[in-house]
Length: 272
Image (cartoon, rainbow, N blue to C red):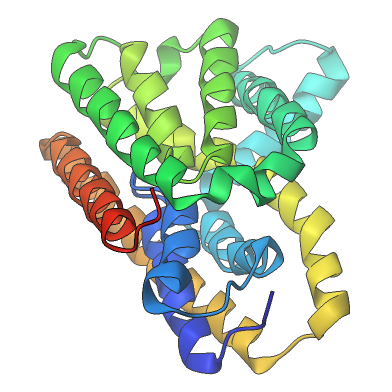
């Protein structure tokens, strides 16, 4: 692995921020961009360093939500069970985080190697795009976040494990799961964003220090983090406004197109 240049870090940071919260797979874009452009792979450590930027945006954009969840967590610890809306939300986020944490520990090696193969990414983009489109178009909207149960939280958390495969998309898998359970588009998106913070934070705590020990805090890393923070703010704001009036079909179409381009490049390069 080789540290990217400042320009490469800027491009990768912008891609990370824009695609982390759109259901199009940030990991796919980070894995495929160096492959398509002939850059040296930056590696999973640099990719996770970029998540610091998205963490900053998540913490600030949903600061009121996190304040309520933090207070709810204290209430949950005190009563040992959810007793109000805030403690229920804290409990659901905890439940949703557990499957991804276990999956990440068990599948870490595969996530860094086998799962990053372009052919797997292309197939995952297309298949998950089809599932997202079908679920969003066919499942009626009948629930808001207030109707969530602990079973819903666990099922959405299990869907997050699939995001270890580049091309699936963390937001794509969790939003799809939320919509499959009947939640409205906005509720599915907000819960997807909020529930992602603990697992992203845990991954950053575990992996970013390791990456920094090898390279130190360099200008490319700082540029990438800043770019990811700014572009992820734009992505969240745009998505929440967009899906309130429209469906996720446009993102499915994008996934089909990107997957087809990757398969075409694989064929051109004789990499089947």
